[in-house]
Length: 408
Image 1 (cartoon, one colour):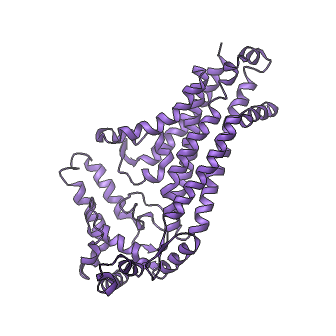
Image 2 (cartoon, one colour):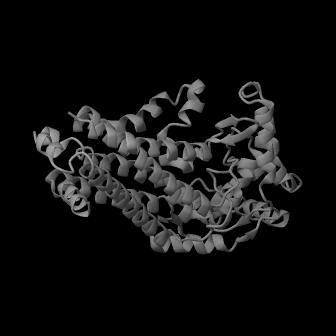
Image 3 (tube, one colour):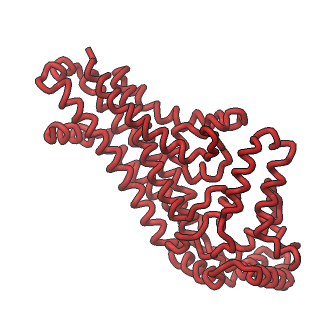
């Protein structure tokens, strides 16, 4: 069995086209890591923006001066500092460089300022300058505004019929369960890592699809299937070796890529803020999942792994059934890109929220408001897709074995 598995792995990695595919994976890793790191920049006192290790360190130092619980006193101080900078000559200047100099002074509390914008700008609205007009009296309602905005949105004409009363109460309860006051720390490393994680995960599944799509069709295409199936272990151990080889390839490539990507980005941008609530970040302010950045990351990488396993083994099943490598290669593309074309149809949002592509972008699914009722319990899409595709993957494995075993 071990020798058979090694032989299958050797066949996969010895093909010239597959070697090119592996090179593309490495190039993809470098490109995505570059974009993730470049998304975090620091503007110095001269108004010049830079990226990289030094820039990330300087920005982290500026933000860490504001680290701690975001109490009413801290919020008041942010408003005072913001107003002081807004009245400076640099900010009032029409020169872009001068304005950048003014912005550089806001970088330390920029994340807290963005939270103020989100809290006082409405649920579906965003105004970068909203914090400039928030009064000291208003700021005391900072935390209650988040829930109030949700309630107002749920009761709006646009959303009133979308959610049942039980679902509305679930969302409100989730908002109220979020622990406050928030503890603030620099989370730029995790923000950048999670922003581009779906990109690296999708590239891995698409490119790895070329490696595994031929595992169950090569013998047939090479006209060697008669020899393969007439061999002593051709219809049992040899098939199991193919399944095992596919599992090893998918697992090995995924974890090497995701761990290298994570290590590169976090090494440059920092690992601070792992235990902070995701709601302190701009993109997750409205999320009803009360989790930390580390938990978000773990859900994302394990979801990506499960998604890779399911999609690529489904691709192998198609290869075994149709005897076509070309058709098998298209499966990942269909499962990843078809939902994008249908995403504009609002009535399909709940169905689209349960498709396998969501596993490859759990950190994005966490931002959505897809709710499902199981008996009397209301849950979000994330726990459902994890449970559902664990079961489906376990179903695909024996089906794949039986389909190829009965090949004539």
